Length: 192
Ligand SMILES: [Fe+2]
Image (cartoon, rainbow, N blue to C red; front, side, top):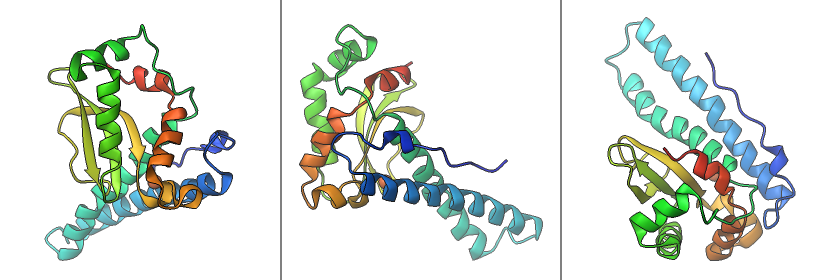
């Protein structure tokens, strides 16, 4: 079954994100969905043709992680936006952030510092399924650095396309706008 691009046009109008930037981002996301389907079909065709031992198969298989993660990370990203930007103080997530980071402020400093790192990629708050612990990770490009068995809770895109149209090189200003729009209910809903 092919993957279908979701419609995130309801995000248009979100404060701190121009329509041009968001539409550009949606188009990029749709490309990952299209290419995930193409790569999956291509791999299937190569296997059916007995070409599993070819460089074409190997390269396409490597490509799958990049396209698939590019699709799925954007879905998590768009779906953890359009909120009020305030963590529910009495919620499970606030308690867990306090437990694992020594307080919300410490977590936020670490997450923002992760997102401000030089390079293109993603800052991700994960929950380790084995222990329940929360951890911030840097994901290089889309496919490098994911902790095995961990569930993504909060995703922040820090590729230049996520902010340059509106903020130029001022990534911290984009990160501030991102934080003002976090949908913490959606994030808390991903917590186990
Ligand atoms: Fe992106």
